[in-house]
Image (cartoon, rainbow, N blue to C red; front, side, top):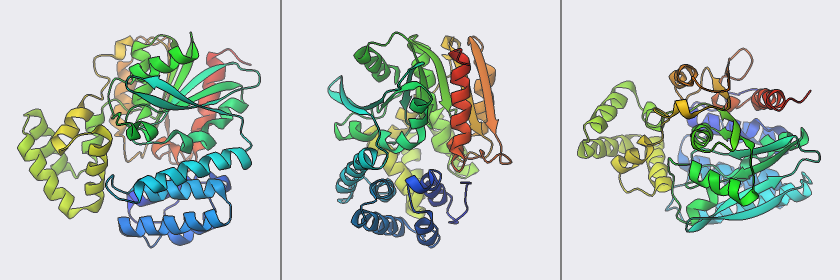
Length: 379
């Protein structure tokens, strides 16, 4: 499966490709290729994916229904009355699919953390070479990554897939997005009694994996899949250059009034910008754009790169529309004390140019697996 251009709106096109990349286990590709091209609004998006989900549900195609419901839910604002019910259906069909379609061996956990619990799935390996922690990113559900990472267990790595604050189930317990991801990571390590493991962070999780490794030395190898070293850059890079510069300058001068007024204007002109800022405030538990940026500004690796003394793998895509490629090169230069540092920037020619190599995700996964085998000394 390669990255396809099926909708002129970049965000819609990318999210549709997130499902297509997993092939027929996750979807009927023809259904998506017929439904997605004409989508122009968030309402169009929700209705199209909801119709696909309900059709898959009627036909007992559980994983198809799960991924379609996930796409329907993705662009819904937190105050939309449909959101909670669609989230619950999404998870229900994921687990039905894991049981009856994948016949997956796994166990679910709720791990105590502060005033709530962390959602976790373990997938054991028959003859484990080691343990790999895996976390998602900005507003992910762990269930949507199972198709992607189950090959690690097939290749001999016991997998612990978990959500942290601001992700999936944690949001339902009002545990909001935060920069110090090493704290939930430590809770996972303690719960399972791990003395050493590798950690893979997907999307924004690339920051979480590196941040956790800087403070938690039971992590002996870390993968940024893909790189992310500055959240404020990422969340302002989505705007046109002039607007991006204005917001960054206003934030540097603590001008909350200008930022809130400017983003209000942008939100009235762009439904996607409105959704992005609404979603950002939802997962961070903030009330204004300025407060959201204050939260996201803390998500940065600057100043702690020297704490990264493990084996490190950095991945990036040359045409990633979320993460500026500057961050890949900056991390490559600034990680100076790693036991080993391996860097791979995937290209369009090999089909890995997109964020998290969507369209050819097995390229990244094979790279990670080969690297883990090398780190663990497996022939």
